[in-house]
Amino acid sequence: MKQSLQLRLGQKLTMTPQLQQAIKLLQLSTLDMQQEIQQALDSNYMLEVEDDGDDDSFSGPLETTNAATQADEADLITSHGSEVILPDELPIDTTWSDIYDNTPSMPVNASSDRPDYEAQHSESESLQDHLMWQLGFVSFSEREQNIASALIDNISMDGYLVDTLDMIWQSLSTQLEELFLSEVEAVLHRVQNFDPLGVGAIDLSDCLRLQLQHKELPEEIKAITLRLVTNHLELLANNDRQKLMRKLAITAEQLSQVIAIVRSLDPKPGAILNTTLSDYVVPDVYVARLGKGKWQVELNPDVAPKIRVNTLYSGMVKRADETTDNVSMRTQLQEARWFIKSLHSRNDTILRVAKAIVEKQIGFLENGPLAMKPMILKDIAEELDLHESTISRVTTQKFMHTRSGIFEFKYFFSSHVSTVGGGECSAIAIRSLIKELVENENSKKPLSDSNIATILNDKGINVARRTIAKYREGMAIPSSSHRKRFS
Image 1 (cartoon, rainbow, N blue to C red):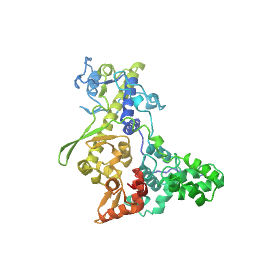
Image 2 (image 1 turned 90 degrees about the horizontal axis):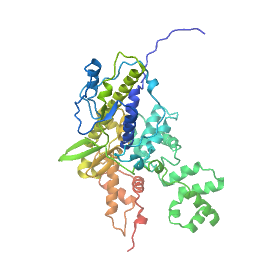
Image 3 (image 1 turned 120 degrees about the horizontal axis):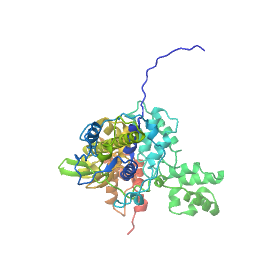
Image 4 (image 1 turned 30 degrees about the vertical axis):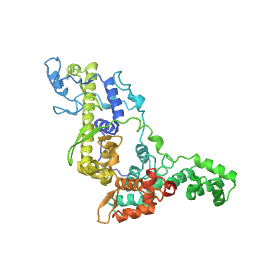
């Protein structure tokens, strides 16, 4: 074999330890962040909590040496900002692999004067996180990855697609050239094989069908059960056994067996991964109205304590000393500064994203869900010059306190449908309109999905009957036949 030398140019992203830590902190929820801070305080003696009565400029009784003076400057850094430029590196002769432990550690309990967050909030993974993790193990092309990410982002906490496949396709068509609906359908079918089974379903019938396909059953019974969930769920909901036996051509014993199988399926496959999110919610930002069209966004000062470098210990570090103890102290000091810098970066990014969301959704803050504008992650990413994956991390398990209630950042992102005038209407606004129409309908003659679609089309909003049915079911609103009152 002939040997030769070749020169190749290429780009490669190196995940430095600092970047890995910043990404990790960014995707943590507020309560998980509390635990992470407490763990850092317990494991690194160079970090300390800044008391309310402390003066940020206080540097403590230190020796007047070069090392001490430089340490003084770094001690002005807190989790909320910095007075001076924070150095990225310190000249030490150890590597990150010598001091960094990748093994997950157990959460550290808060001190006795802090709330027991572990009792209120257990470690959990959101459904989107779980699906995105699985996506990393599937052989998708970059184009398919983008489609799959959009589909996963559109899945509700219960595990269903929020928007119709046609709406998702239209939204993706603005980002991907020559995108066909069949491409989106093909990727969805692969996502629907992810755990938990039934996730990414279009409706309840689809969800049950997906679970049945993976269930080991006798072929005849499986075929009958699939026919039931595909075509006769309404009869099952009304417990009309006689009609079911006729439609399926089965005996009462077989019907009981089939019904038992259906009841063993999970109608909300995604709920198991989202049970802890509603246990305890702490807002990350507060939004206050200053005047008409003017809103102020501030970080919640109570979500994380102010931390800083301990000036006494940092002043003991001697740069020329290569003894084991001194190298260990320099290592701890560098880790402490990295942590504070990452924490500051996290807070800054959350605040920037929150301000951008508020600026785009002033109509919602002023007038409620009916005024919600359609918005996708890409809109905020382009405005802030950040990657969409960063926006996705910031908007997951981060909450905004408004006068209308507390909302997860993700709530403000939704796809859109077109209007007659060439404009756009967000999916959230459409759901709000449906809810309003149902609340004001004549209970003796409730509006059908077709009636609601006609009313919205008359208002200039192009929405199909099937879309109305999907949104109605997503809001747990019964069908018109079940809403009807005879007295």
